[in-house]
Length: 236
Image 1 (cartoon, rainbow, N blue to C red):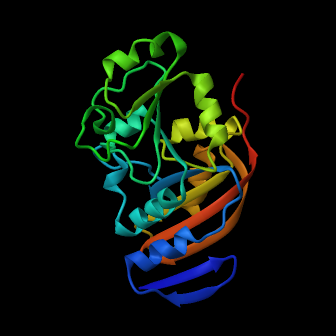
Image 2: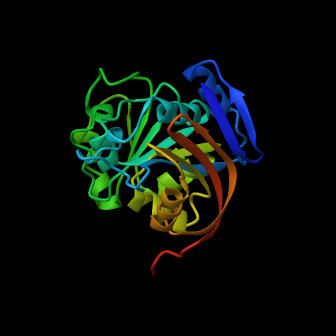
C-alpha cells in the first residue's frame, strides 16, 4: 500500500496495511482543545449515497481515518438523525454526545440497546430545556445522561478533542458559530484530481478560507486535514 503525500511536503511512503495507515493518520498533530469535523464525500462532492447514508460512499481506507480520530478523542458529537441513519453504537474510545432539538432519540442503537457497545460508555442526550425533562424516563439506560444545551456547551469546552461526526448542515452551523476549527475530509472514488470535490465541500460547509495541513492519497482515496481561517457567519 502506497501513501502519496502532497502536503505539507511531497513524499511517497510504503505502508504495510490498514492498521499502519491508521497509525499515520492518528499521529497527525492537532491544536490543543480543538473540535474537528470528520466527513467523507465522493469524487462528486456528495455526502451520502443512494440510501441516504455515508456508508454508501465510505470504504475501508476512510474507516481508518475515522478510527484514528476516535482513538484520540475525548468526545464524539453528532446529531440524533445522523446516529439513527448510521446505526450508531456506543464507543469504547469516548462518550457520545447526541443532539436533538426535538428530543427524539428513538431508533438509535447506542441509546436504546444494551447490546450496542459497552454499557459503561456514556451517551449524553442534549435537547432543548422543555424537551429534556422527560428524556430520562423515556430512555432509561444506565449509560444515558440527559443534558441541557447549556450543559452541552460546558461538556464541549471540557473536552480536549471533540470529533464531530455530523452531516453538512450541523457541521456548517458548528463551524459558523466558531465551535469547530479543524476539518478532516476524506474523498473516495478519486480518479484524477480531488480539488473540485474539496472546494465544493468547503463551500457547502461555509468555509471561505482554510489552510491544508495534510493531504495524501492512498489508492482511490484522498485524506485532507485543514484548519479553518475564515468562515461564513451564521445568520442572525
